[in-house]
Image 1 (cartoon, helix red, strand yellow):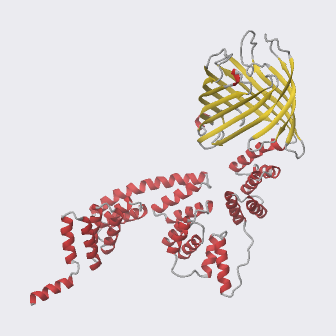
Image 2 (image 1 turned 60 degrees about the vertical axis):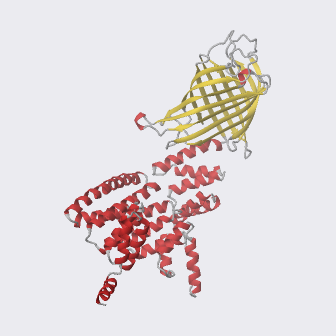
Image 3 (image 1 turned 45 degrees about the horizontal axis):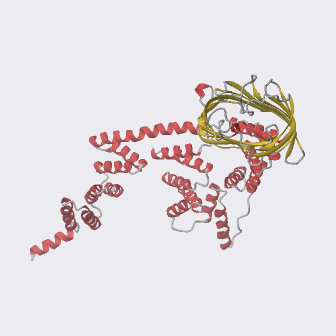
Length: 598
């Protein structure tokens, strides 16, 4: 009877004994799932025993459940704060599972408070984490100094500072990143978490309240879980609105709350320049151009010297096809004291100005060498245009140069290469529409080289057609590297080619490199050519396919229309009849494009 009482007394004193014994037997038999279940039963029976959580953690590790093991070590460390071995296990697992900030914090504590052996291990682990974080913070701090509007730089700096436990720096740059991308509302959740860790409870609640009334479901759900389990107070709504003044959901909900309380509803407040600019940016990115124009105009009225707003007004009018208004804002923006804004405004103004001038003269010339013909061919045009009122047409006078630099007596060569003519004409051209333009002209062609073809020195010349050009991606003058594609397509009727209609298509796909400062700002493109030509009369010289690599380059100091190009092409004639040159050919072409408009 006494033995039975003692046995009963032992069971009451140690409720975890039986499941622990079974757990250790299962562990010895490598029955890990059964052991985990039994250790959990023991932990529930004796929740204040750190050793059970440690054994459960090690068993989780045997099954590859790293995060579960980490959480058990965390509980064990809480029950035995002076067990530095357990603290190290927890810190290593935090680092392994992405909780770098927590690992950094624990290693720092152990290296300061632990026993000698633990301090040595913690010191090495701390430095392995801290050194890359410090270097990253230095690097991204320089990046945001150079470009304060770089969203990614602010976000990276905030994350690194948080992991290194520099909470004020992290909060500062989470806030700046969110100001640049207010649609990334999860940044408000992170910002609130940091403010809470810094003891700024009301600020944390304002961030979470603003995030909880937004359009990003993930941020909304996370913020609601962090907010107190009650409805927000009126003053909390007001604080959230101060942080996020353009959050209409906050304003509406506060209005309903005040109305339900029998208090006056929120009166519309005059927006600040910053609020109007934020709303303008959001509307512009979303494609609501009329709204963007309204908010940018308000921001400009409130702060006439905000040159970024002037630039955005220009772009908004430009996208809305209101170029006469756009050029006025670009002209103002190019006077900005900010070099980046001034450069962008100047470039936009210069690109737009020629299309709005009543009179303009364009000159372009493209001399090129062809190894196939061992000759230099030159193509060029001087064209003076005048705008016909509000009609989408321009009348023009033109002088074209088409030909080569030497006589081709007794040689057979395609007409499109060897016209050797100056062509004087007058014509009409439409404005460009999505990259396309129609044109027609009448004039005379005057040959400047003697030939053996019994062709007259002066002949009528009628021509016209459609032209299309478009570029996508990182074009040659882009500031950043990347892929690009360009196409130039023309369909041309020429009376002197037996009233023929010729089609040309030149296509380039490749990669634009970043400007090379060491080589004086050299800008380069490497690409693949894919060219095709055809005509209605099926003449051999007008029906060809060409493929091959190419390179275009220019220096940054050169005017933007200037560039040099080199291509190595393999060509195929699609028509062999009456073709004296065979079926295939190779050609090395090098040329220089020069153009300007006055």
